[in-house]
Image 1 (cartoon, rainbow, N blue to C red):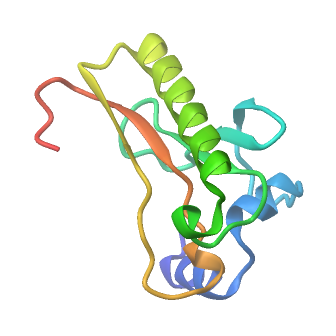
Image 2: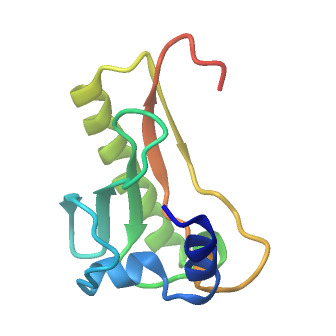
Length: 124
């Protein structure tokens, strides 16, 4: 992987979720589940087994501020549904879910939720 090219693409390229959903061949991901408003897909470079990314299909820069309360609640229910499916498939000791924050408004900032299984003895 060309790290410099990757960093440049993340800072100036399109939102990777929107590019993936549009079928851009430079942003391939494997969809594991979707509904009318959300998508769950495998992380291309998972840091733990079973890492799945979850995002609304509509582009939002800041999921907490930009979604109405009802839409945010539906997203969290979708994240839970995916996390339970990951647990059933991977049988981790426990699960975690996070959505990294970003300090600047750019295409790089749209970050999906990431439910993933964790070993029961994992320190994080």
